[in-house]
Length: 174
Figure: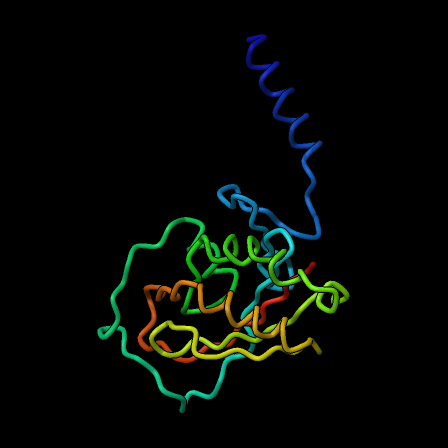
């Protein structure tokens, strides 16, 4: 009987000291990823979110034409929080974050606090283009191009009939 009271007391204490509302919610299986209320997925100095959908008349791929690989728990959370039928592999943001010192290594690029990049994923999951939204010098844009070419293809999220072009906004902070 005293064990039950002690256990109940500990549960109540844990409940009282757990924050109920915060700026960002961190999943238990996140390994450093956090999911904010604005539909951004955050990892260290990176933020990524799905931008509004493009027109339905754009090129799409049928689900039967794609190769589906099982998604990890982190990738399932990313897909759900990005509200997308394409998901980046779980190490994509780790790769981007590891190149951050390379991107901001010159005097001109060191003055830039953050870089906003629109990433376009085509109907088969490959990164087909990008647009730098921040005013940056030519060298930084070329380094961003180099880093983006190193990224793996996106994986299709099971459960959709058609897979089309999607645009993601990536924010890289220094």
